[in-house]
Amino acid sequence: MQKEQAIVLHSEGVRTQDVKSAIHDFNAQRQMNPELGKAVGHLVLSWSGFDKDKLSPKIMVERAAEYMAKMKIQNTQYLVVEHRDTNQPHIHILYNRVDNAGKSISDRFQKRINQKVCKEMTLKHGYYIGKGKTLVNRARLKGIDKTRYELADQIKMASRSAVNWKQFEGALSSSGITLIYKYKSSTDQIEGISFQKDGTVLKGSKVDRSMSFLALDRKLRENFQQQMSVRRRMWERGTPPPAQEEMPSHRYGLPHYKEENLLKDLMDPVTQHDTINPNLKRKQKRKKSRGLHL
Image 1 (cartoon, rainbow, N blue to C red):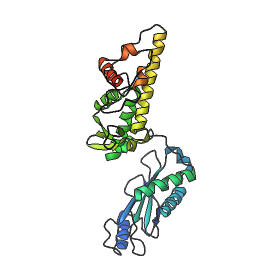
Image 2 (cartoon, rainbow, N blue to C red; image 1 turned 30 degrees about the horizontal axis):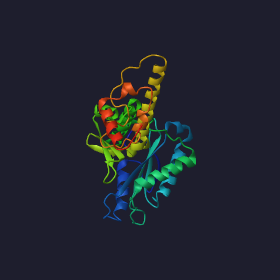
Image 3 (cartoon, one colour; image 1 turned 180 degrees about the vertical axis):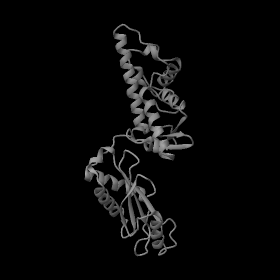
Image 4 (cartoon, rainbow, N blue to C red; image 1 turned 90 degrees about the vertical axis):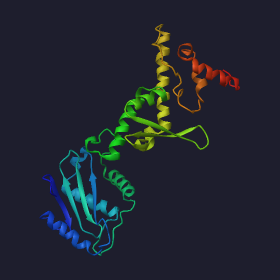
């Protein structure tokens, strides 16, 4: 309410001529349930800039009321305040967690319920659904959200060109990111991955669904196959491809990871002699002695 670009759109049971009056009214009702610690709730409803033409002060007030009903925030004092300090339309909802009967309004599981309600309302009213993380205002992010988006950017960049996990690890290491593998109980089989940056650890799937271990492994495999296709075409044209670094398999060099597709990679007739390093040949011989035959 104190910001120049803040406009009170609606109020219930709260005077809005000045901040002091609003605080007094919230505190007066709070006395009905003095044992409740955090008595004033604060929620934000935000839309994409693409939805500006669909919104008006009246509609935003209606959406606020609909949202509060779905969140089971009813029969209480509240304010709906619009802020016009960004390109994204958004409103702030301030409400008293002590309702008009003196009962407490629960805020348990609010984050989980909020996600469900916002999705329902977005689909119901046909609001824009952003694709990925490209439209997020990064400058306003803080804490773990800021780290999550930084990780997403750097992981995406590293996965574009890496053809194996060692390359991928090296690219992220230069950005201060460490990979932590999760192994299946009592085995050396990897079933998950986490990323550590600035002391914060996040699972790959929590950063983004496309950054789980399986999704990234698939991406590295595709990069590897694409690189092999390019080299094959160069050989077919009689142009020797540039010397390839060690580790022809996209998984070679990843500690304790089962190489179930190593034989398929070695059977590529185009570049075997040019890409297989001595260490990999020794590994191949050991596997052959255990009954694996080309």
